[in-house]
Amino acid sequence: MQKKPSAIAQNKRMAERKKILLIALENHLGVVTPSCVDSGINRQEHYQWIHDDPEYAADVRALKDVSIDFAESAIHKQISEGSVPSTIFYLKTMGKSRGYVERQEIDIEGDLSLQVQFVE
Image (cartoon, rainbow, N blue to C red):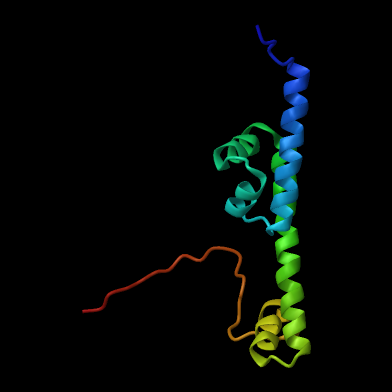
């Protein structure tokens, strides 16, 4: 008769699997499908871990910064290579405080009720 693994052994194994998937997620810039394929871990298990384990969920959320950093690096590289569209995009998104906008964004506070009067 085969012995059932102890709860401690099961928790250790699950922690190892989570670590493997987190490494795969980092390597794939947070994209779930290729990360699961590479790690041999089912997508549903990954999403169950996110639901059940706040620490794992926080680690997954933190990986979004890795993909954003990657994209920012690519934009900076394109800008340094003279890409006008990348430069314009960057200034429109990151240079708003310096006036690089196509439209004004105005925040209005207070009562914004509108009265309409029909005249016959």
